Length: 321
Image (cartoon, rainbow, N blue to C red; front, side):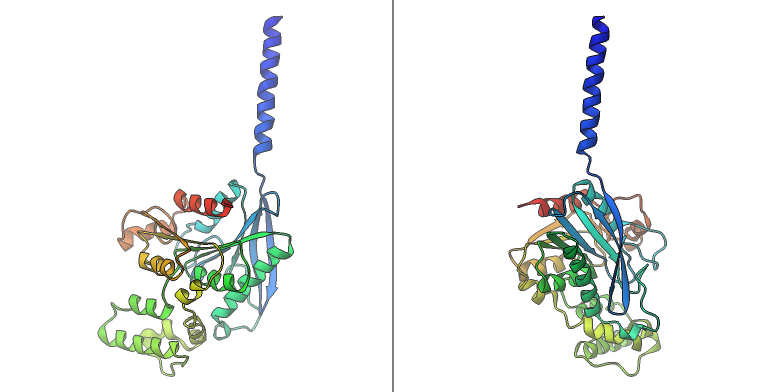
């Protein structure tokens, strides 16, 4: 009889513990978001965890045709870096909205809209439309986190709105024209000189009438308006006047953005917190080499998770009062 009573009590305790654990889990609601703005209907994914008075992060993807999950059709396979960040944030009770930029993934441009109509400022306006969507839907503490080119988009946006904080992830700290010059420095001398002249012209606001066929993919007439618009933004000047909490995250094995970029941003706004993460590459995975061939293998590896130090820093920044 005593053994039956003991078993019954033990079962009740285990049952109580089980339901208590269930109650502690943070349920995540997934909502497909659609927001119409200039010439495009933006498509995104909202992870919601509990009270809307708590934090939400607007996650802005990087350069080129990178989608809401951090993947690009230009690279075979997936890395899911931004999806992984959103998942870790959700596990820690932090909501997030990530989206496909205009013309990418499910964010379809209005029929008849061509590449030559796209400006960098459109990207900022799109991000602002999604920021406003979060405000209109009751979110009170909105953080902006941008990766790579998304860092600059988010930085410009943060100066237009009043976010709870801004997070730069592998963001550049120099004018884009100067970075392109650095990337084109290994071209044959004649092409390098021609590309530098073209970049200077675009930075001054002038289009290039005659483009060398060997440089056509970079300076094709239809992309020149975007480049001119992009080159007008100087991240050091923008972050200098940014009046909110700032976190700057950069990896040591990033083959696309340098540590000096993060240091430039920090120097421009000394109040910002700068964290250099050892062995983190551009897609935020742990890679212990700067060798391009080895480093880029991680760009197609969805099994490899974003670095824990990265998400820990983001969570601590967001949860800090």
